[in-house]
Amino acid sequence: MIERTLVLLKPDAVQRGLIGEIITRFEKVGLKMVGMKMVWVDRDFSKKHYKDHVEKGFYKGLEDFIVEGPLLALAVEGIHAVELIRKMVGSTEPRKALPGTIRGDFAQHSYEYADKKGIAIKNLIHASDTAENAKRELELWFKKEEMHSYKTLSETHVF
Ligand code: GDP
Ligand code: MG
Image (tube, rainbow, N blue to C red; front, top):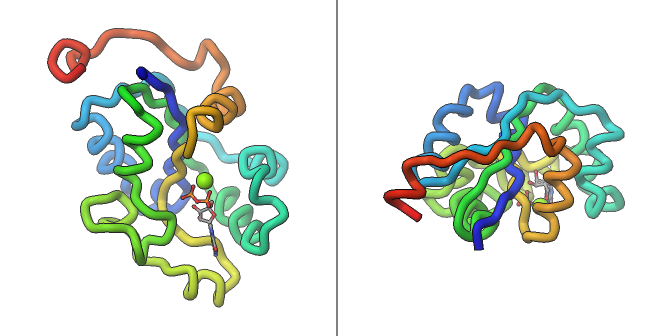
């Protein structure tokens, strides 16, 4: 039940200065940061990360988006962490993402707008969508020694 998952604060989140705000939300629910690094990925790496999307029409814009600047990669641990973080992140399309979610509170793109401009939906964040993908993505982004096991106060008061 205790899971680890991958979160990326995409280049728009870094450039908008939302790193602190977003990490604070995860810390407040008691999620544990177990790995963290700033990375500027290239196009080959993007194709590995988004391997299921490479053939899709929006992929070119998505790749341009993810390589346009540095992003912050997080390995996050918690109870049902994959599900919890996807809930906090909200729908892929910020237009549909509910207030209270990260995408709903800090972004406004729609599919219609992004597709017309030929760009990716700017939605601040990536979060693994299944436990299986979380495992694969963490292996892609983090070496074993870049993730850490330690105790937080949440394990006394929240877990
Ligand atoms: P996520 O898991 O919620 O991030 O969504 P997906 O895995 O389906 O898509 C990956 C990313 O591609 C999204 O976060 C968006 O940035 C972008 N994206 C997805 N679908 C579309 C689309 O239909 N049009 C455009 N322009 N971008 C999209
Ligand atoms: Mg996805």
